[in-house]
Amino acid sequence: MTVASGTLEAAADDEPNRLKRFFKILGPGLITGASDDDPSGIGTYAVAGASLGYAILWSALVTLPLMAAVQFICAKIGMVTGRGLAGVLRHHYPRPLLYGAVLGLLIANTINAGADIGAIAAGVNVLVPIPIVWMIVPVTVSILVLQIVCTYRLIASIFKWLTLSLFAYIGAALLARPDPLAVLQSTLIPTISFDQTFLSTLVAILGTTISPYLFFWQSTTEVEEEVHMGRVRLWQRQGATDTELKYAALDVNTGMSLSNVVMYFIILGTAATLHVHGQTNISSAADAAEALRPLAGDLAGALLALGLIGAGFLAVPILTSSAAYALSESFGWRYGLDANPGRAKQFYGVIVGATVVGMLINFIGINPIDALFWTAVINGFVAPPLLVLIMLVSNNRSIMRARTNGRGLNVLGWLATALMSLAAVALVLTTWWPS
Image 1 (tube, rainbow, N blue to C red):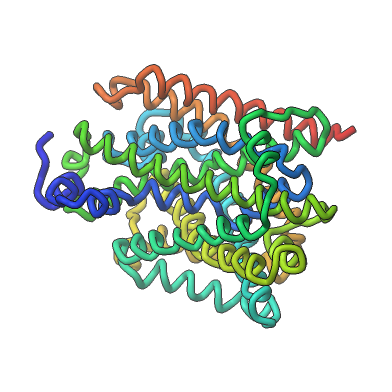
Image 2: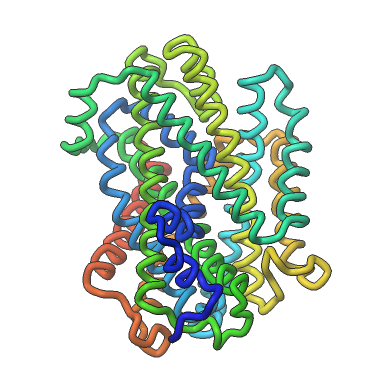
């Protein structure tokens, strides 16, 4: 496959400055990694730090290679086949299995988007005393305008800048003044406990870091990138050079590393403040931001709230768009954030419908924590079969040709599949047989 002018590979190779070349390479992988730290994920990590202290810090080191492997495999599927994950499954595997997974994805993403819209409003409320309910509709409208009016390139650029908001969590954790020796010990020496709180928290972390919507988003945005480069026909997108795959791996690894660094520091910051002072009963990231103020200072609380707002504005469009991508490819609809809304009505209809339904969740009295719990349950059961299919696709020579997985990717990919399957079983056991 030759390198066409105007491609990412050509643009990066023409840049003599290494730092500028690195930032040119960053794209779908960076955005995917940042979106993994959505408000519900931030809440999960904050609750983990508050309830378990430093004991769960080691999980960031364990989940990083698994996340990176799964997301790179999804990126490679999109780059090599020229289709998103749903499109590949539609052409090569039983449709009922695909439709079931996509329906679960739509329901989970809609609930998650609704909870994240509420979290953005709560983050604003931490900074400015505006009632949360007053912010729900303006937040929803601004997110929909971004997705419907802006071009894919502008949306991608905005998403890349929004990733900077996640560094607020690192600042908040450093202001908490954690105990260096305890942090180092808990990071490098895993602590395992079989009580319900520890197991359920570990399951929640796994379900938050390896989420089905990321699989679809990663593969389809790789396709969107190529379409934006001018590869509008399927045959133009099929195949990937060694350099393109190397750049994709760098992009994905950077995004997943950012995601896990943020996860690590959220746990660290809440462990050093809330857990140490006995405030273990929090239920959301907004609760954590409020609780941090008297313990680590107003600046730490404000940083956590700012990160929550930025993460929400990044995550909600990705949640609804990934559902729209998956449904569109499953049913053969026209799709794309660069597509004219009049010519991609179903695609944009899913985005608008999921966002509006998510918004309404905040007005009908559904407890957001309960909503996120059921999101985790749905994702927990959707992820394992999807991961099995992803591993089968990525090792199928008739689909991937010479770009099937190597031994290292297969070990990490199947290990992630096994752990997510065990997590689903553990979720059932800890929920229905808690004692």
